[in-house]
Length: 388
Image (tube, rainbow, N blue to C red; front, side):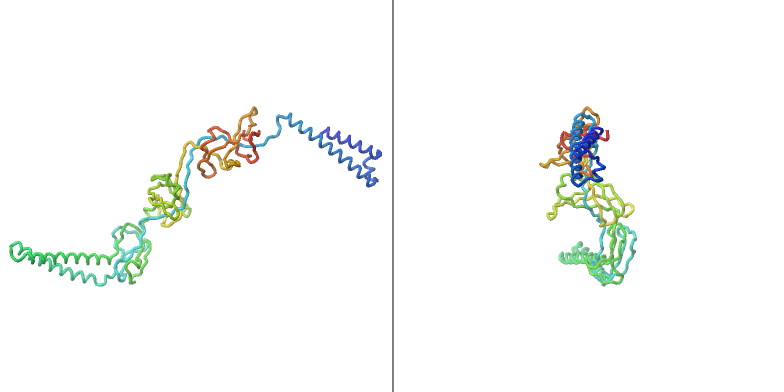
């Protein structure tokens, strides 16, 4: 700085002599335009020459200064760690015990024996339907059956005593058996006038009104649901078919009820949908509080890959060459413990999860890679490591 000031004063003195020894104040106060322009030119040239000398001095200092400024970076040492990769896909919550009961007979709804929200056991009578006179028909058939039975038994005794013909015996036997079948069929029809619970569950909704006319298979009566045996179902792309097995760990995220359920795959479909190239997977759900409902939306996280000794690097430090090859910058030691030489290290990447990627080849445990400052680095460049 003193040398620069000395040079500036030297050139200032020369400028004054070239302007008829007038000092700067006189020229600024009374000098003509030509004198002012000449003074400016002399000082501008002096400044240019001074800058040139300073640049040469700085270049020489950089050559000899061992503590010159280097690019600053941070780094980390790659260590083996447990890596679990998950396939994340939308899933639907379902139960196989969710049915709407329809009548099998035409007629009016006589009575409900349950209320909405009521828990019932399998076989509980839920409702009755007007049978349209089927009970009377059954009674008449029962009388005819009793007569046919008496006639058959009498004919059988006579036949055993060798009285009567075989044809008479066979005719009475046939009429009796035929009447039995007719009674059984009518009993089945009459039984259809009563609606029973097909499984343990809860009456979710009464869908018809007492007295309403019901059409077989068309008019719903009520919905019965069991929430104890829920499961999650998802459609996975076929590319995952070789990585998913029965027993594969998975978790079900249910954001609407703020729950995550840990479970395992219990069923894998054997059919690939040709329209979207997916296959079905299913996982059971525990539902002790009953918050999980059929058709509730959720996300299935399936653990399709695990490596207990994976080498993981942050995705943000990975760069790509012109040819498309992935690489990271590693650090090589120098004589200075805080100064390193940067090396471009090409890697083979595996699966990614969150903000990290598994490195299958190119790095070893114990290698140090650059974390912050990678964007401006070049292969072979020296850098200073801030976190050492």
